[in-house]
Length: 408
Ligand SMILES: [Zn+2]
Image (cartoon, rainbow, N blue to C red):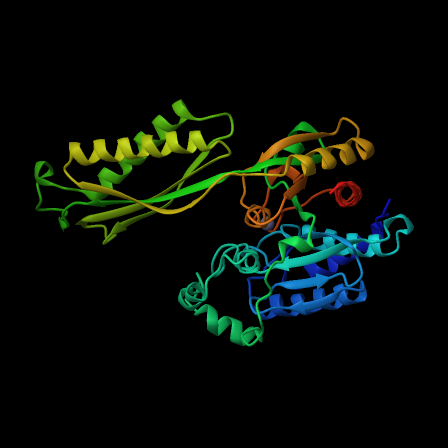
């Protein structure tokens, strides 16, 4: 059995968190100077672990095992959300590194190899899942031409040039090279933490469907326009948002979530009746039929609001990812490993967050394992996990990887 080194794994996680440290968390946006520095540091660690390593044309750090006969690809993303946590993404990247080292010296693991990847921009500073999509041939050059940074509008090409990655080749997957892809991550929700459990076996990564709803009324003077004559797009949006929040609970499954996370009114001035308004509606579920039902209901509510007037209401889809079931065999192997090291302290659950494993699952069998997030906090600098859970998780993950490599 490949043995995990507690001090080494905690030490490397803490070292990686120094790149862009912010309070107890990390601020390391994709292609920022600290992100680039951290990728070079990771590449060096991969080389020390005996891997042939490249940083490719999109910023992925990929370490290949030159000698193994059967290989498992292991990784996650290494940038963070703005002022985010020290474990989101980094945990899976350092687990991958630790597994590569543990397998290399394990006498029973001859011929079995771990290859590692630190994907670029899963967190969407430029576009979502850039690195894993690039690796799986799902990121066309035209999209790279088009993408701009979400904060300051920097063209992606420009950011890649500044990072020193622009002239490099983008690495592409050879699915035949791998038994599959495995990713560890903090849960980010509070299911494990509140249940007092230590390992989560991911069954499915939820589908995420997003829409833009726009409402068109009439911009006019807030004093001289009588109430009966108004076509207030702001009022129409708030009414519709309320109806959505009233109706969705009636059709929700136990884990469906929905969010109206962005609302705009124009011109957004105190003495002007809003002439136009816009909101973005998102929902997530692991069940494709439930997603269809939510979509139909949202369309019904929008149609109803449009017919009732006085504003015109329109809806358009923005982005849609389908639920991605994880490989059943990988789930079973993770569960067996969890039962060996933490008997009775594990559960199966869906992932309510998107992950690179969903992207990889289109090209090879994929699996995911969670460890608890204290208080279910993530995408915030205070995000944390108990040390003993980090170490236990690594050992369970290593065991699962070994079983998957032997069984595949
Ligand atoms: Zn993440």
